[in-house]
Image 1 (cartoon, helix red, strand yellow):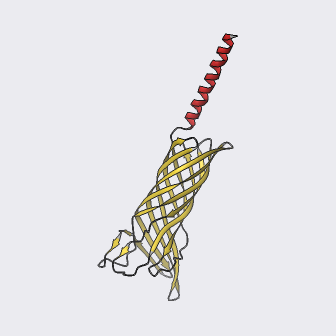
Image 2 (spheres, helix red, strand yellow; image 1 turned 90 degrees about the vertical axis):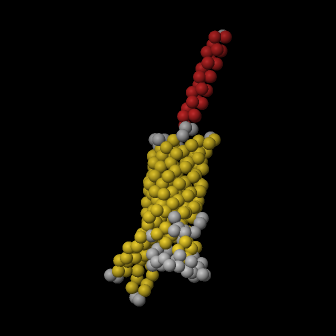
Image 3 (tube, helix red, strand yellow; image 1 turned 45 degrees about the vertical axis):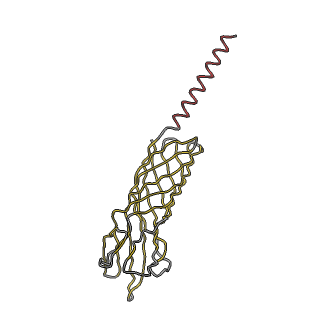
Length: 229
């Protein structure tokens, strides 16, 4: 009888140990690669204080992240992503309609807190957190009638009075917030819907403008596919 109790106790202890080991395995740090499409816009006010009426500009993003367990079901997920943002705008001048497309390229670092709950054969994911981005290249392309004009964007915080005012200027730094929801399969493949809102102005200060009311911020959403391993 005593030997049976000892055997049963050992089996229960072994089972408990294996369960704990499996949970620990599930909670290990993991790496992910991700990519997808962006639907970006630029919101805010122009120099006169009027609301911007831009349209969505489609871009893309690609990069990776690290998922670090904090407590059960919660993870810290920093990443590094290449992302294109911007906007489109249409206007009419002397009877001709022009389309101006602004495209900004960023290296972006999202710092998300992620909640993952078991759902079916995978996990439901909900994440949010800040991001910091650095713009390093961009273009403004204007087309209309027989006109096609390509301009490289210059990144600087202040535009002095002696600088070329025909050049498009933007600040390099962008800071904002992320929110996303998605689903991850047991094999590591996942899909998610992303949303972003910029918190700081990305338009520079123009020294020549004494009453400039410009306030331009990035915003948008996107769809991502990825793999976690």
